[in-house]
Image (cartoon, rainbow, N blue to C red; front, side, top):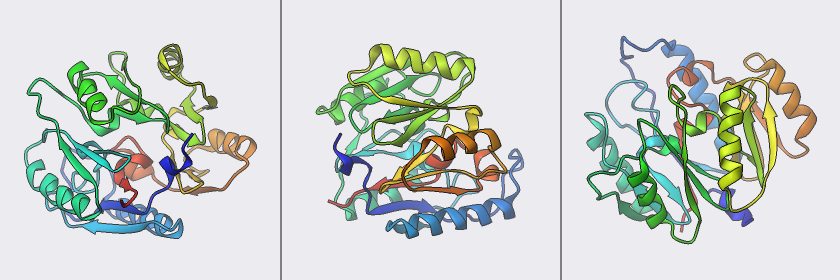
Length: 265
């Protein structure tokens, strides 16, 4: 593995600004506090945080993962899905360019792709095929990053985004939930994978979405994932940090959702 794949210099994030959409269940004040802790932790891991006022409402102005797929100095930008995303995309495009990223736009009119369906292990890409991402979208990822294998993986009906169930927990380590659906997803990935990985299985699916940043694993706090927290303590022998993310996780896939991690070129 190229360990630089999980080394980052910058994180692009949105400012938590009201109003809260009526349909959302997250407590706005708690979400803002959790977001502040999240940004503080990234800074402690030597990541420069670029905070953008993206307009709109919470949570759309802080859940950024779907806006761009960033790897190896390239940022793939899907077509905006929601109304109002054009402004958010414009602001993010500008800052990614300033950080030396090469911008590639998804031009295929049939392609559907969102960042939370795209999982990069450090060696290869997997794209969850679902209501939000399709085979043409997976092809766009493969074309943007031709030096890495890219495999589409069918996500079972009713399941959410791929990175809700599986993420990177360390060098060649995949963190996956223990539910039947999550295990089946992992089996499909292992059958199709070009490389082999260690697997860390966590009892609670909501614990599976982690961040591995600059040699440190970030996972959720003990009060939110008590059983999985024990697994992290027992199995991970390198730096770990835990934070509360309960409110933000109600409106996203989890820890990976609220930042775009970049290594400045």
